[in-house]
Image (cartoon, rainbow, N blue to C red; front, side, top):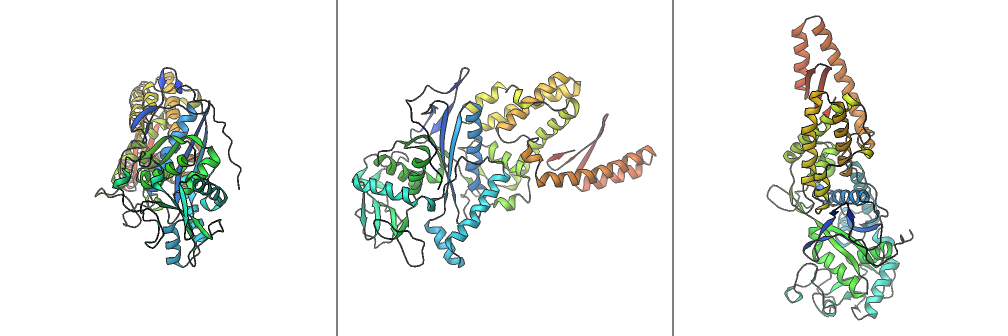
Length: 488
């Protein structure tokens, strides 16, 4: 087991500022946009509810990791060291049920799907977290937290199960705005379970035949869903940390129960609760494997490039709802291609421009500091490109060089720089290189036909390229070609 990452909890520091700009984030708990004040000077600690690995990822699953990867990049740009934990839920009711239905061990299904999530994170350019703990690897920490809650009068054992006593925690419902008196019974236990209150939820579940289990002070069993995140966030980030991220669907009951457990045990938990919006289908229904309306990442990537899918997920504000569709991704491809086209033409004119030394557009920084406003940030990048295209047309090399560096730096902060080795140094680029070589041969043949003044043959080659999705533009520097989302 990995040792916890040490973060000394110091006195609250002044609001993080860059120049005269303040970073502000929407906090679900306070229902307001708040100045971001890291607990420890120079460090931002962040926990994200990661994958429940009962199935392979769809774009709704992966959206949160892309959004919080952008947040991590921005916090690092602001000069902070980011300690980032993203968990894996590899023991949970639905996972156990699905493994049983497939006739495979729970651990085997979990491992296969965890690898699928890891591939999706990587292909979409999400930097690895500082640590990615599994629930099954932290039974000791879960036992300790459950025991603290029992000793504090906030939990009780019954028939081999252990339950959190909702009525014992006066602030229950504060995160989600739920009134305890209006809540229905928790559905995380059998109807015959010996709960004192139907709203109480399971911290530890007694083992059933054929299910994974571990020994415990209350008998063999396994952890409840909610307790794992409280135990692991405290272990790796400390009893108080800065940011807890999750999808909006987890506000209640999961995050509400997390917060209750942690606070009842005496831990401060997260100072900011951030939640990304849903990805829904054409009818507005949340994407879900059980409904069958999910767009699997692997399937989507057969239609669009990974960078385009990332652009699509980043282009919407993280708290907004995205209506998932291939048509929307086609629009993202068009928009991203405009940026790629500028970078390609500018690089051709002025050579490489070091993005690390480039200035950010002021509107970009303002947008990102305003609750990670990626739609306005991308609009600022496109505006820089529009102005820079005029400089390209005029052959103004100093202006083009400055714009190129700035555009690449801003895109890099969103994980979208087309010249980043992640995008240009993969198997995808090998395929692109093959396509480029084939198009180059066709263009050489076309140029030869034009040199012979055989314009019929030249036009025929061009028409065949167009039919294959390759558009050719004749420029003073020679032919330039584009293909669905790429530039040559």
